[in-house]
Length: 113
Length: 112
Image 1 (cartoon, rainbow over the protein chains, first blue to last red):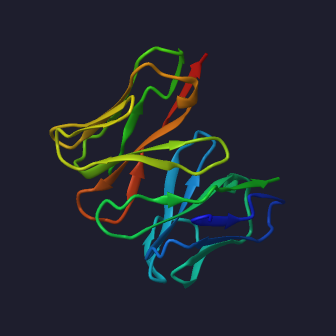
Image 2 (tube, each protein chain N blue to C red):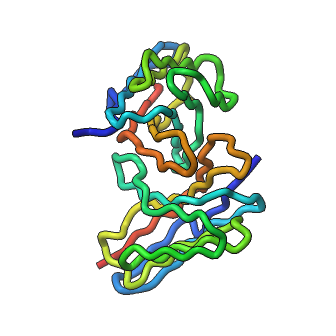
């Protein structure tokens, strides 16, 4: 059973297009996150949601819009894609308490041409 | 802004050698975690350290949290090719921001 699953695994698209990445967790966690990993492998938090409510928005351009229809799902929609958006996007979840570890999906590699 | 500086960024060693990876900050963290990431996969938790001065061992891996809770280290004894991967330290801020801040990562290659 995959704990945190994200789709698609690879996404290749042209500048200016709009795309979505979906994420689902079956761990019963209350908190979900989106992280961006750049070409140097640096992981930076973008958003976090707790029980469908936005908790963290790390000064991400408003072309990025997360949506959480329920606490098991957190999707990421990106408008007007730019070359600099190329990266690996990771979804993660945890219980949201204390030093609860993050459980990551396997990432979505987005390439904007 | 809390930052974590990890060093070295790259490490290539022979099987059987020992190595240490460092994770430093000028900020205090309530806890630090170490993750390992393999190509095409997400990071996976190795350990969480919470108390200043704490030492935890996971087989050949030894993790230490600094007394002041500003730094941590990962020591691997007798490295094996299976240890190859990206090692990431990550800290939960002391102000309970709900953010897990990552270091830049250390890419380890262990040659047989």
